[in-house]
Each structure stands twice: as structure tokens, then as C-alpha cells.
Image 1: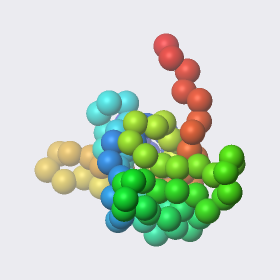
Image 2: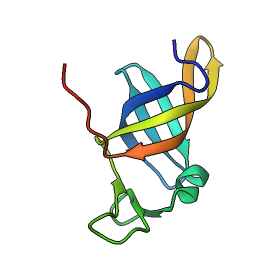
Image 3: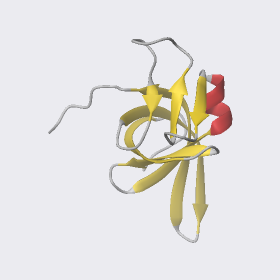
Length: 99
């Protein structure tokens, strides 16, 4: 089971102005808040439904559905036997090796 401080990899499955959703191991739901994303230099763009870095291209990055991300577990929430994770220290566009 995931624990606070663990570094995990997942795929973005939702992008909203309030947060991004991440699916970890195809089983756990995680989220990174808009506050955290803004602190990392991202702005939500409603027209494209993604978070875009303030960095100028080509170094600028975007957070959108289906991209792999790495994050650190900040909090673990449990409700009715279901676990969800809250993340921090997000890294985008990392290379995920296929098994």
C-alpha cells in the first residue's frame, strides 16, 4: 500500500481548474490540487482543458490527459474502504519504461 512520502508514478486521467486526477497502478486514485500546480508555475487553460507551464517553449510543459507523472504522496484519505491519495512535488513528462 502507498504511504506518506512515497514517490509514485501514474497517468493523468482528469484535468480540471481545481485539480488533476491521476490513476496509479491502474487502481489508486490520486490528485494534485490547483494550488500545488500554480505553485509549480502552471496555469489552467480552459480552452484546451490542460495545465500549461509558464516556461517558454520548447522547455514549457503541459499537463493533460494520458501523460505519465511522478509525485510524492502528501496525504492518504480513506472513506468506506476506498483509498485516495493527495500528491505534491509533481514531475511531468517523465519516461516510463514498459515491462
